[in-house]
Length: 100
Image 1 (cartoon, one colour):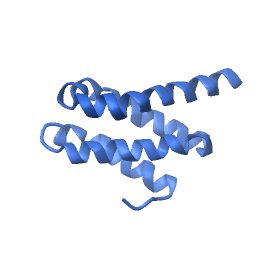
Image 2 (cartoon, helix red, strand yellow; image 1 turned 60 degrees about the vertical axis):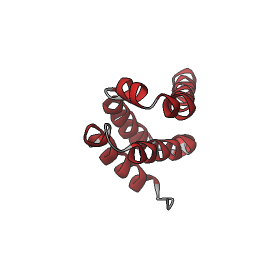
Image 3 (spheres, rainbow, N blue to C red; image 1 turned 120 degrees about the vertical axis):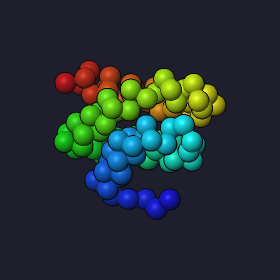
Image 4 (spheres, rainbow, N blue to C red; image 1 turned 135 degrees about the vertical axis):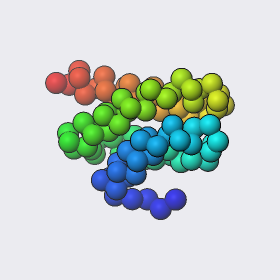
C-alpha cells in the first residue's frame, strides 16, 4: 500500500470506517487494510494537528461501534493488531491530557 499524506490517509480511514458494516462479515482483507491505515495514523500521532486529532477521534467513535463484532469474527487479528493499537492510542491520549 502506498503511503499517503495524512489528510488523504484520514479521509480513506473515514471511508473505511463508514462502510465497515458492509464488509465486516465477508472481507477480512478490507478489515486488515482498515487497521493498517489506523496504524499509520497512530505512528504519526505526534505530528497530527489538533484538527486532525479531532477528526481521527470522531472516526474512532464510529469505529468503536464495530469493535466488539470485529473481536468476535476475527479474534487473532484483534489480539495481534487491534488491542496493541488501542493501548497505544490510550497512552497517547493520556499524554495529551496530562500535558494540558
